[in-house]
Amino acid sequence: MDAVFDALADPTRRRVVETLARGGTVTASGLAAQLPITRQAVSKHLAALHGAELVTASRMGRETHYKLRPQPLDEAAHWIQMVSAEWDDRLEALRRTLEKRRGRSN
Amino acid sequence: MKLRDETAAPDHHDEKAPWVERETLVEATPEEVWEALTDEDRLEEWMAPDVELDPVEGGEIAVRDGDDGRTGTVETVEEGERFAFTWSRSGEGESFVEFTIQALPGGSRVTVVETPVHSAATNTAAGSTAMAAGGWGSRLARLDRAMRFALVA
Image 1 (cartoon, rainbow over the protein chains, first blue to last red):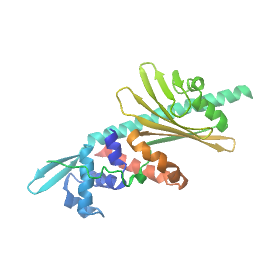
Image 2: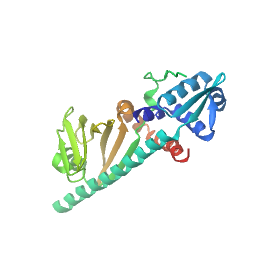
Image 3: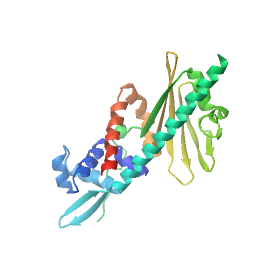
């Protein structure tokens, strides 16, 4: 999970993910044509995404084809939603306890 | 095939942002908020039924709610302004939690961020600069946008 957050913390890598999310299976050259970065940079980002298991890679002839794996993204989104909701509840309880205490002292 | 992660080197980490950021406005002074955040008895009024805290840098924190329990270490104690710790459930990854308190006319703004700990190391360094520059909102918007693909992909 930490690997997913680390991989997605990079803004260029998020653009690669966005592009992958639109288009099924792509090659590094195909992605580079759609993004303002070099093929070498695309390959590095794909390697990082692969390391975080955010993409699958399969070799066909001379080219490697990449595909987004949505599951880690779902898990990361779920973590964000869950933790956000927990803090909303806790902060509401904090607000109530502070204002209750203030009400008593006034 | 073998892929080597050549981007793992700690470069261009300055763009990292917290993954969760929430805030509340309270009718209480920063001093009152600080006490509620850093006194273990006060924490039990809102955070969890059972909280142990040694509110010094390097001190321990333990937060228990029934079967659910987390332990961690206090990272930052800046009285009245900033309180941060890492915590984790047994066997799970750590995350970094940081509260900041800002005085407002008639009350305070309390902000909390939580981020898995690998990304957190850079948040503390880059965080205050980015927040001062007002870059927080747009970064979070970008993250939100990125995360929405999780729902449609």
